[in-house]
Amino acid sequence: MDVDLAVHLQPTEIEALPVVFPQADYYVPPLDVAIAELVRPVRGHFNVIHLASGQKADFYPSRNHPYWAWAWEHRQQGTVDGQPVWFAPREYVIMWKLEFYREGGGAKHLQDIAGIVRVSREELDFALLDRAAIELGLEKFWALAQQGSE
Image (cartoon, rainbow, N blue to C red; front, side):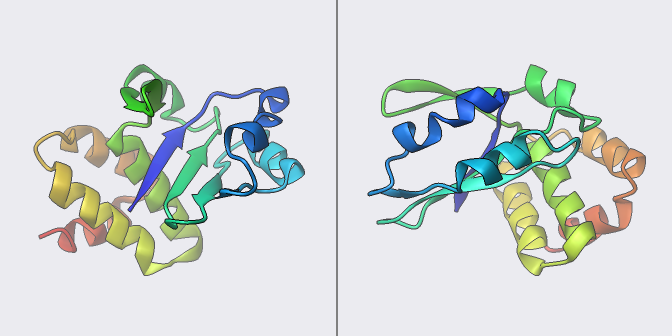
């Protein structure tokens, strides 16, 4: 279990990571690594891990993904420690995990997607996911992930 976050950060805002996530309690990537991921033209990614629990937050900062604007418009608000937080829509997380699977394999991505589908089947926009899979060249991986969710 982890949390996936579509973030809209500037490089100067990355400097707040060690303040928000103190080193004594969290693994935070070196700032130069996080900044490099933030400015990647596509598919940037880094994570923060709570050391005591192993809970992980995946940050997805790339603004050049074809569905970035859609994801930003459909982000979902929640709260963490009483503070408002915006989360990436499930469909966007699925798109990212499909792309990561295409790039490097790793059954964990397909297992994560299958878990999202099992838990959130009623809330997912399958028409959007089917269309995105075709547009992004991910249809065979999307089919694999759906087989694992049955």
